[in-house]
Amino acid sequence: MFGKLISTAGSTARIELDSEININQLTRLANGKQPTVEVRIEDGRHITPDQRKKIYALINDFCLYTGYVPEEAKAYFKGMVQEQFGVEYFSLSDCSVTVASYMIATILEFMFQEDIPFRTKIWDSLPSDFPRVAMCIRHRRCAICLKEHADIDHVTTVGMGRNRNEINHTGMYIEPLCRVHHTIRHTMPINEFLQRYHLKPIKVTPELAKELHLGRLENESSTNYRSFNI
Image 1 (cartoon, rainbow, N blue to C red):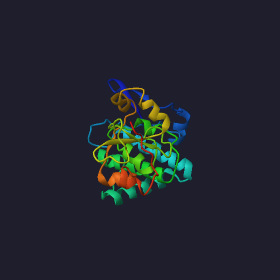
Image 2: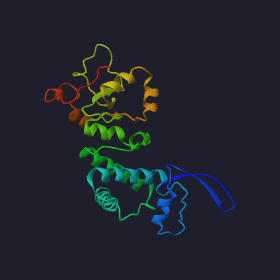
Image 3: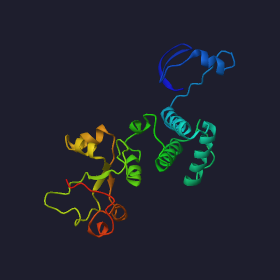
Image 4: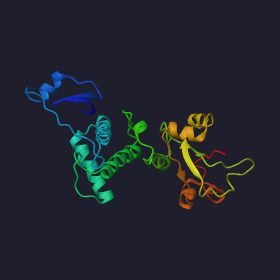
């Protein structure tokens, strides 16, 4: 359960919870005793309440779909983070902000790969510096709605009269969008669009251009991706 501290008066604190609470259920969980709570204040160094909330929401989504219990899922993903990022054992109560970000990214990546649906609003609430676009490019999904088989939208304009199959795409900025969101993208200034949807376009490297088949040489071998000419 998470919330925001609204005010204090002496030893009394007023907290606005993110969701409704059932006092009878809390009492049962506390074995009939007076429920107690722990207040943690974000200090910018350890995992933030918002990160912890996102992690547990994703774990709940995973468990609802797979049937695993939360403790099993948490241990599994923590193990993945330790292995992939080389971090030592950590607790979600006091790990660093960086490790918490690893945890969120690891769970999301796994859910993308296994096509596990998101039941929460986690995706829309991710900050603009989170590698959302890179994750969607790897999995061929719209960076906004997660629809599959997304097209590549050039944030860097290709230009009138230029053949997108012949030009060098390296250094250009791109993002994966479905047709609906590509249409919306052209109804407003690009900066306004990026800000509204919290997007951070990806700069094309030679390796990425080859992987996405951008340009003449790459497109000779595959046409899995469609690239907008704008």
